[in-house]
Picture 1 (tube, rainbow, N blue to C red):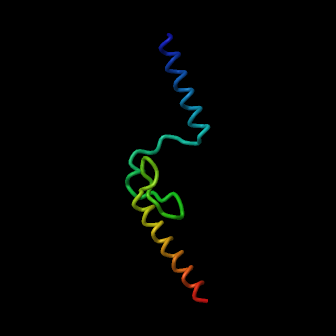
Picture 2: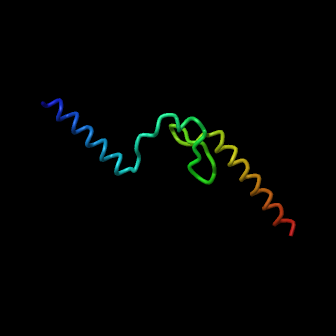
Picture 3: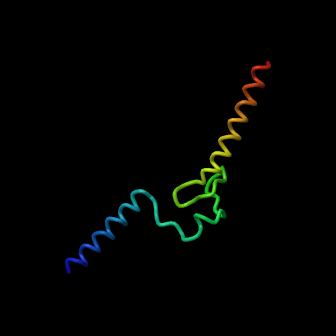
Length: 76
């Protein structure tokens, strides 16, 4: 009986934590397929967040755009 109580308590605590954080277990397969685009930036979602190579590429693009804008404002 104690074992069932402990298992039930763990499930209740885990469920409460998931509700509080707004996170539920991801669907199997979606996080690694690259088919799911959750935001306007279009980064693929993996198990631990975004793919770092995509993030690094986006940062490099934005840095290039910043340099381009700064050079155009310095010419005027």
